[in-house]
Image (cartoon, rainbow, N blue to C red; front, side, top):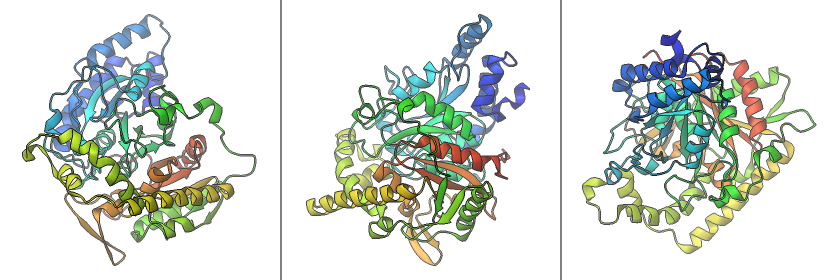
Length: 469
């Protein structure tokens, strides 16, 4: 069984370990061997945790001693290299932070460890987590395990590639506008961006601003997302966005008394979408309808009035430039990659435009609030196209030319509004690339979208497909 352990999801591995059918050492060894076999082609792994095998031996001893075991006891996990890990380099994809070793874990990492999971490795990202491809001057470019000539996305692209290729069963990524959901779509795995503040951002750059930033789980099964989220969520007393939210237990409201209602849309408000992606969303809607759920096409007028990506850009550039300036102060130009230079060179948003963007963000929140008075879930696409070739800056979709930032069109509304969303595979392109759909819930309603996602997963024809590496 050992040589197949890298194919199992985290929930299965935890059960096998608890039942003493496999040991944490065997599980860790299987994943280290998988990394050695395939990462030279994929380049998803930045640093392997030196104490990974020692921690696995300690986990095995705990099992044999009959100790109380956490829900993820002995299961390896990976974390994006922007997330602090005590004693393990966290370099943020930049030569500026080469060799930086944090003294403390980020809260999200600490909670995974408290659940018994073992840090295996850190994964690649764009410089400062700031682009839709995972490429930087420090650790190079990550490749999509489905097709090495294509991107696994960004900014959690190394994480998505590692999980899709079997190098890790479970991981942590961050999401500013697309960054756990887009990479999941490009590699055919699953991910959760929870309600803003559900999972504390403590221990992740930047400390400020973080009103659009999220940290969330990435995996190969919906049940793994649910298990990881149950361990990650809750206030920490340090991240005020988290500390002001009620506890997970108090708000796991589940499905309301009436039958579930799901609306689906691919526009307007998102712009052009590739027909294969549209067909996948329609197929997912049909599948939910076949499960007895009320499903209908919908529109959200607020998305048509205010294009969320434009709103985000007008707000975030002004907020983020000081963090970039501080991080790069006094550094040579050759230490900076594309996005740091781009961000520092952007003009400031005028105060009038900034205020108008704030008002537009409120209109978007109101628009979604009105939608969720009538529906429980919104089904959309994640990306307008499947994973693309490396380095492409412009796309023509349904006859309309758009730049690469446009790929965030259906994901960034959830960052502007703080709504939760799941990215999960439900289709395959003509070229054999995964196509994911996005399930959006109302604020704090992660339990609802996890429930619907599990139903959709149960009828998915693509659930067990894996890259051939």
